[in-house]
Image 1 (tube, rainbow, N blue to C red):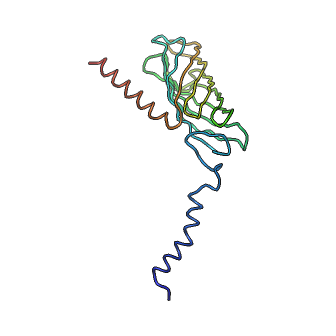
Image 2: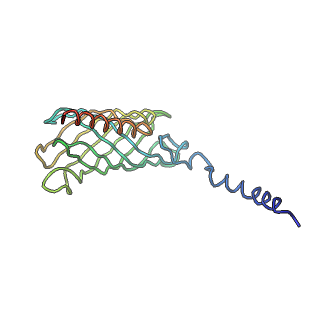
Image 3: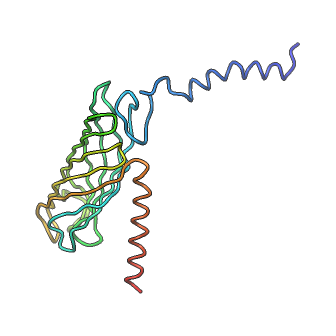
Length: 198
């Protein structure tokens, strides 16, 4: 009769290949990547972006801020990625924000560069009610390694104290750079607000 140790080692010998097969993707195309790459390096990738923008039509200054979260999926073995993001941007009214769900298209130009575009309605923001049609946003960007994006946009505000259309130019940090940039910005804003209140 085999010993307990022999049985355990036999079972582990049988289970290890199965465990490795489960934990290791069968190909690189099966991966969900934090930093986006064209197929077949990644099948899907997360969107975590944050950064400032300069915008016309801002009554309290030309600077604004945008964060975006979402998922992109590479289509087959081509160079296109499709996905969706949720953008949260500062609004002209101080201390208020506009939330925009946005379909996004990414066209990979090379292993490290891509063009991106998207547009969507703003459904949360300032006004008589926080919920409703608040305007719309269109977005284009040149994306380098999914780490740095130079962005341009057209923003339409339907209601609030300063309705109208504005044009923006911005810089966003993506992938694993996005969250620390956002946290650093929030910490800086807190320090400034605390200093102004003292």
